[in-house]
Length: 146
Image 1 (cartoon, rainbow, N blue to C red):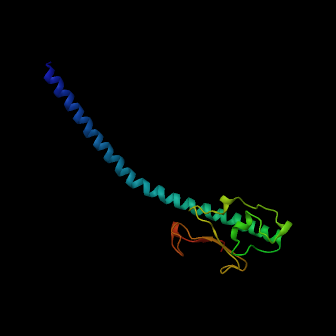
Image 2: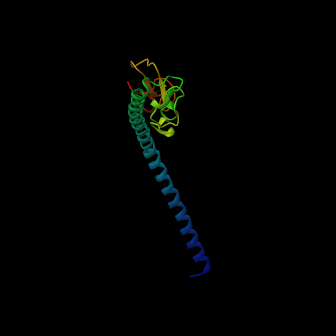
Image 3: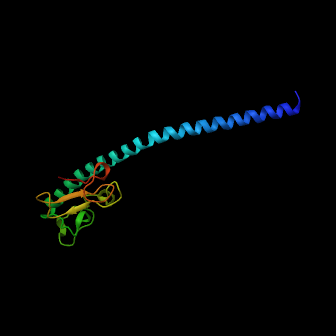
């Protein structure tokens, strides 16, 4: 074999390898386009589940605060009253009832606490979801203790 033939054969092999690479990259791109949206949808569902669970825990902690202090936190104090002692409750406060991170929803925003409640007799506790707007569906849906 001459040196020229060896060079041509190597060039063809490299070109074929490049074509293989392009085909594989295309296949991976198509698969990613099909799989990623499904995975992202599951993340949204997981965040909603975490929000529901955290709301249930926070609701119980607000009721514990009320049992200890004889009143609910007001809207101005909000859920911070579960983390830091309000000035007017004296030694009745047996907190902290939760950690600072526990009053943050899965979208990195503090849960909304409203007293007196508009949807419940005592208090409302909710998150506006991913879009941080009233209403919405799926990951954007409001999640609350109602």
